[in-house]
Each structure stands twice: as structure tokens, then as C-alpha cells.
Length: 380
Image 1 (cartoon, rainbow, N blue to C red):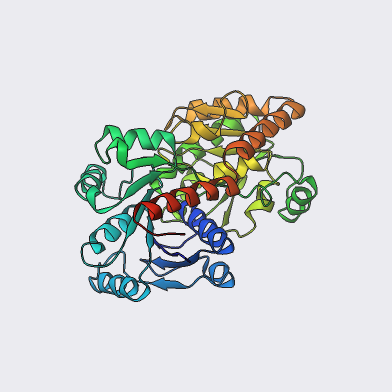
Image 2: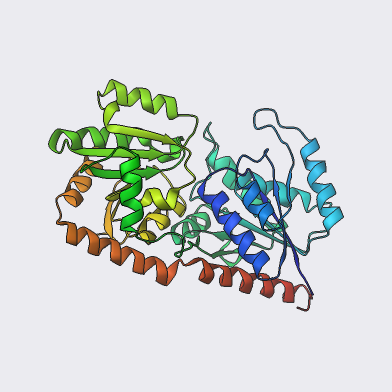
């Protein structure tokens, strides 16, 4: 039998969770599964990629600032119409919505994926959300976490019982992200870069990414190593604030704010090293991408970062919200001989190939899907 899978996500934008969902949907479609995607918010990205793979995309057109109950009825209508065997939700709002919808729609199997170690909102609603996970846990068949650290935390805070949660990591296409000197050299020239040491950061300008700490650390670096540049790709509600902060520190000319980029694989090859200053994380796609590209990495030791960055082998891990520690490790990496940095990058790529390749992760999802389908009496 052909199995119909509906993915539900809070929104489609250029973020790690969204990228993972899109990769999963496209790969499953290639392997013969019927797939469609539902976005709670109006989609901002990936529509063309999904439609080019013949994956329908629907939006509930929910307004983030003005919740509208009509979105709930739109989702219920979609599920009654499509009668999926599996609904697979991603991120806190979609997870809770899918659980609620299951009370009055036919959903044989519901899988909820958490993409962060603490799914806190802008107004600090972490504990409330963890309680909501616990209260609604009986409405889903299994919760999955993208990092082992996140899995253990969800169990410890009582959001999910141990027998109802499993670890399935994010996956990365190592055929798309790989070291390419020629690509990096050409784009580096187009960006007007010469012999500077180039740091790269990719991610949305939101509280979790803690860009103020990164900017502070970079200011300290410039005091000792002036011939360096920081590239930051991404958008977000705090972007203007961070740009203004860089001006206040008199280092704005040393930071290039690139905005949203669709050439991340090429951009990774421009950099000499990758930096992440997050205050909290799940299992960041950009760290997987950087490691797969062979970049040595300096990252905060939060969430699943320590599962991607092998401390002292493929990069360095530092405490969060500590600009001095971040700067010291960045300077330490910069002081290494180029050959040693290259070896760190090679160790990082090998680690990704062995543990996070997209095909291996897709196989894990297929095993879980088939196990749950068999348990529900569906014969494949």
C-alpha cells in the first residue's frame, strides 16, 4: 500500500527545522511515499523546492500576532479530506495543534518532533510549554528529539516519559555540502575579500542565537588580529539591533551582514572557520553543514552542539553567554597552522558522514514509520 504522510510545521522559512522537514519530505517522496506539507503560518520559503518535487503545500494562514481559530478548522478539513496514515508535526506550535486536532479527526499515527532543547517563546513561556507537552502526551504516538541532550532534558523536566521519546538526528546532504576550494575562491572574490581570516555565522537574528555575545567576542579578536572579517547570513527581528550594536562598538565595517542567502553551500567554502554563539539549541543544521564542508568550528556548548563539534578535534566548545571565552577559543583556532585547521575540518566531515548523512537519517525515519504502521495493523 502507498502511505500518505502529512507534515505539519509552524512555518516555512529559512531555518534549521524547516530545512530538515523539506529534506525529509523530498527524500520520502523519491522513495515512494505520498507526502504533503501544511504550514500554520503563510510560507516564506521552500515552496518552489517542494512543488518541483510534486509535494503539495497548503497554509492555514494563521497570523502569529492574532491567532485565528479558523486555522484549526482548515487543518481538520485537510485531514478529513486526505485521510493520512501518518501525521508528522514539527516544532512546538504544530506539535500541540496536531495533538489537539487528533481529538476529532482520523489520525492513525501521530509523530511529534521537537527541534530544540527548550522551546521557549519570546515572553518566556518555557515551563508552560513543557507542561502542555506533558498534558497532551497521550494524544501522540511518539515524540522525537533531534539531539540526545534534548531527549534527556525532556525526560528530566517531565515533558515526555522515557518510553515515549526517541532520538533521531537531523541529516545533512554531504553531496551538497563539501569542501571546494575553487568555489570558495570565486565567491570570496565576488564578496570583495582578499587575504583576511574569514569567520562565518548563519542563522536568524533571534534571542536564542545570542549575536550580542558573538559581536562582543569579535571586538576582542580585532584588538589582537585586525585582518579578519565576520560574515553573518540571515534575517530576523533583532537584525537592526545587532547592526546598531556593532556600530556602537566601532566594528561595523568589519562585519558583513549578508541577509538571506540561497547559496549557503558556496558561502561555507568562503570561510576559514565557523562560529556559533547560541544561548540554547537543538541540533543546528548549520553546524552540520559547516562540519560537512570541512570547516573548523567554535561553538557554545549548548543543546546538541557537543554532539556535532568534537571538542579539541574538529573545533572548540565554550560556555554560552561568555564573550571572553568565545574570543579566546576563536583566537586559539586562528593561531593554528593552516594544515592543522584543515585536519580539524577533515575530522569534522568524517564525523558527519558517519553519523549524520541524510540517507542514513531517512532510513531511520522509514524504520520508525513502518514500525508504527505495522503496530496499527497497516500492511506494507
